[in-house]
Length: 293
Image (cartoon, rainbow, N blue to C red; front, side, top):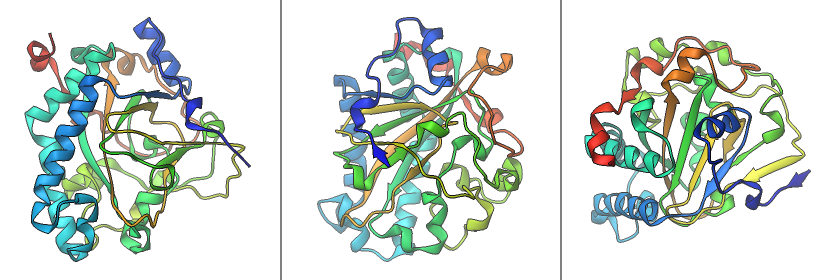
């Protein structure tokens, strides 16, 4: 098994925006070092996490040890709903897209999610879906969807996530047919924002890989605050189980280019059988254009 260093990621989009999207649909992976803007965004978001957990210590990455699991995930739920729903965070997304050559009004956005991967969290049975190797498309996401992942702090490979690029266009055994989007969110809309209630979620409802893989290439993510990873949702990847003695926080959001979506343009569907589509619930950013000029 060969492990490839993170420098295998490309660090610049092609000059032509259509070519950029095509490259992502074909499996290109991009890792952008922090810019002044992305670093400021990461700092602001991480400061909000720090402030929220201030009652339990100076370091939010250690707050999980000051609270029981139920209380901890209640607090995480407050932050997740805020980051996902409030317009000021939508403005941040629009500005970041514009910085990288994406015209916000041409894209629909599945808004900002706070990702929280706790030390030892993989030991919670209800948290198992967080660690399943998967494609985002198995969760009824459009095949033209792109994921934008932002590091909020220094993130080491052992506490991060990794890609298996040789499986981008190669089918794998999975049970994505169990996932029906509208049924999944019908009872509890918070599920769309992210796993946060260890008693309410049922791991059996989440698609997962159903075979052993032996990748020749593994691309781990190592990032500094404000670094940005952009990839197609069709990539096979997984969040890593870790016992690093601290929580890993990050942000991600997803975009779908409207014209590409309606033209059926996107990454190849090699093995997704999920039902429904998240697209109708994606946010339009037309009314945010004044902010990004």
